[in-house]
Length: 193
Image 1 (tube, helix red, strand yellow):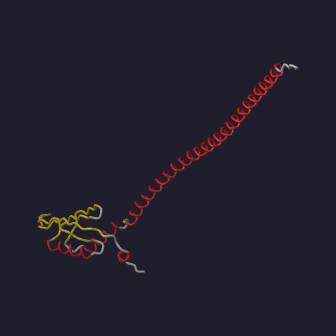
Image 2 (cartoon, one colour):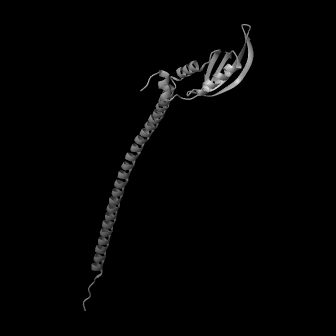
Image 3 (cartoon, one colour):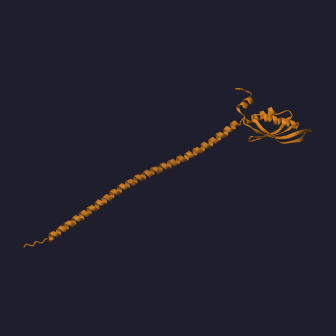
């Protein structure tokens, strides 16, 4: 019988298998590292793109915030201008009020009645004056009540007084002012349409 020593051959096969194992393991490690690097690169790209989008959105938000502040400032200016416009319109509307008041007082003033002062506070007018008698004060109140521009005359005080050694009646009268209509404007101006 022939004896063959297979130990060196087995030893070579083992070395070869070990070499293949180490090569295959190294290849797998390199392949795993390459895959990990590829995945990391892809995710880093996604993150970078998302951060770029977030940066763009933040920049746009800052621009919109600036625009909102500008809009608020413009709205405040608009409100201020509208308030001014309303004040001007109310002044324009009441511009002729004093003229109407004095026209009505001159028209409605009976003989023997004299005004000492006329004071206006908002839509309330206070008349202080002298009359030859209390009946003339009553006539004045009736005349003022007939006026379309004046309303609610009310006697505050009437007392007997002496001026230049003459006995007269001193009175304080309050009346309200009603805004003139277009018809009363025409009548006051003496014209027709």
